[in-house]
Image (tube, rainbow, N blue to C red):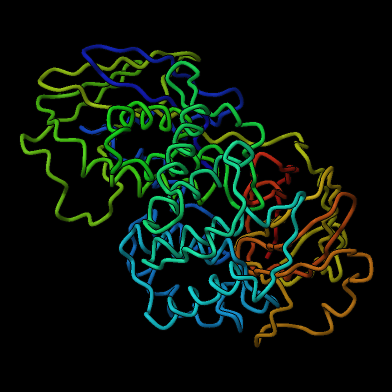
Length: 523
């Protein structure tokens, strides 16, 4: 597939040049340079739409983040239709239906996304979720979730933040907590700031507010214009769906209405935008926060207009964009992810320079992306080593694949560390049928010999579609595990399969992938 290989972010004052070349191994005739133009800093980059539009995984948080990130009311309504089956008896949301218990972090995340995006939750469901969080912070229910450290205080602060955003006032619970700002990770420090700010009756409120603001300022740092935190190495609590990217945007959202931070907000936003990699941020939650915060920043801070024409040239190809005088959003596109894109094909020469020029008033922002289709030819191990074995169960001709043949696919994984919410994704030839979901085209006999004894781990949820087999694990300990599945080949043709991949969904830099060769299926 064509993917984003590199991305850069700049402002076009008059003329600018960006080195841009087809990546090594990239297939000719596919991809090119994409230049996303916007009059305002707050316009989300085009890579954000691509990230959400192409995002493959499907837990409850990811469905919600995609709906919010795309501003897609239909996706949100589809989520709401299924939401009752995701809630446990205490009102806490589960990542997948059928799991035994709901999760405090996920429940708080859904309440926050709903409140900030304007996508409402039914009153009854919202009340049940709030009651579940209240019972947790008051100690009336417990939730044992995997964690590499004692994170109970951090979870309670996260839940309290979501409750206070809903207008509740759990002052007694907040006052009873022993909070030392210096010892908190940055995500919890932001939560504690918001809780203190929203509880006017909290004892010693002004003193606590000043202490937490000062600690937040102490942690701010910049690498060039890129925003970082002094405590960044210890802030990546991915099992709670937080990292430096989400912290950057959550800090901006927390301080948007704080007069003492008003002069800092534009620089913070530029610094947060500089944290992009390949046109977006690392996780679904970080990208959802980025979308919402950019919208809020634009409403409050930006009024600048751009007029004239922006020109782009790459090799012998060129394109231009004519800015309208009013710079109003297009009426035919309800999405908040609005930017104007120019696309240029790769030049014949191996290396090129993208030349940008703006002729007119204002200084538009540009996100330049290198798009290419680069086949993976060697395995990559960055925390996981994965291998794939295909055993024919039913062959019309030995050594060849025909329509109607059955495969047993075995995926073996070696994990270097413990991790929560890990997904294994394995491709199948287009149109193939993965057996085991029990529909009318299934075969109990074919799946009865799957080697379930050697799995070691059982997935929390399995997804079967016409492109991929996916297994989601709530927790994967260090060591070896494997899983197998059965697939019937249905369509003839020549299929180029993407790699088999395993990754920690909320720490996607921990992953492993192995290339897959072409599959030729005869009729």
